[in-house]
Length: 505
Image (cartoon, rainbow, N blue to C red; front, side):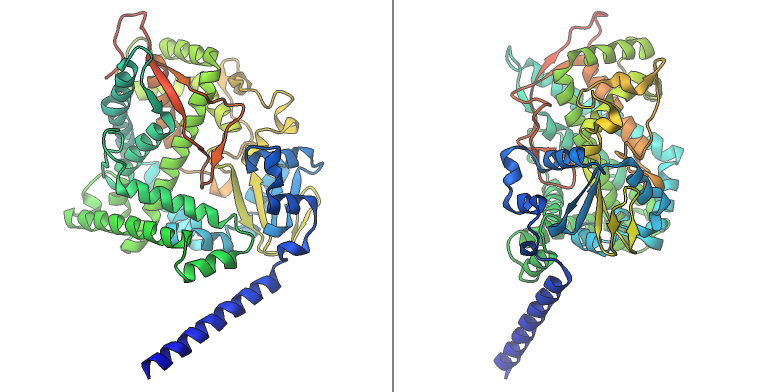
């Protein structure tokens, strides 16, 4: 009897999957129904003959579009680089452009009900909670101590050691270094946990490996023309979906153990990290895991991506490094100690802020962001979008639009952000690197503090030379954030200080 019951269940499951596939095809326009040049180029990857990256092809299409808008029908996706459309999506018609169920489904296994994967009341609750905690002077002071400690005890000594290994110096993958640094920092800030990833002599922690795997494989789901494909693979526990399930399981296991230990120590009263502070408002451990893992994704991947791109650009522009050193000396003097006072002086370094903003204009850590239309609408450029359509604003392309930034939009020129020597921010809807509108990044100031501290500490003490890499022809790897394929190999040289002081170690 049991084999017969099993057979019935198997046949029922197969019929259900087949029916779901047929319904999905009926709801969507299959690839072979669209013969437009854009869809054909996407499906055949013929764009790769002229462009190194998909984002560069999209940027080309958007630059040549009079409306700065492009349809990729096989993905049911409307791409835009039009600031007016970004304003429309993120501010004027915010309620009509939620993350949407399709997006949430793609990241649900990894991010669960975290702030970046929900809408409505769940999003509003987490945003209010996180905004209050991130604005807390106690948390900000804790974050400063974490970043200063990681710089002083790990990053600077590591670079110092690399600069002494042989006359030409040791070759480092700076992208890997920054990912480890940022992961250490965000684990301390989020969980009060020190994984020690920046000890390069040690293997990468299983937690970081699983985190990377889950992020990369989740991003791949979004590139599949029909979601039924990855959903079927998930049902069968096959290929990438099996690897994703294993990675998420490990993240869940380790996060659950950290939460359990924190509860034993007294929960909200046990530390200054985000987890301890959130425990005062959230009792559901799975929900806590989702919230904190989302902040870890934002705090690690975006910071590491932005710093990697910055030092690649700096390698091509030594005059910018010289200007940063001049400003740091003028504002902070020759004092290299990483103290709370030093961090406060970062706010007065307008050129550093301008150089970092300019770097993220050309290489935004999150190259694009999508919403799903909840009701039929018309974009400011006249494009009609039906309910359920995915609309994507492309920050990478926006940074390369002459109509937005002028004919020198492809140049790395920090001065474009300065007025009489002071940093002046641009309209966030033409520079949506930190998102904009109601969902603007609430961790922006924390991230800027961390990145500026790294830049000043490293640039004052070292020269960083990229090896066989140029900011003119970057090659990206797939992922939720911009990552350079093959890393960023660099050679580190210690600078001789005029004052005779040693770099901080």
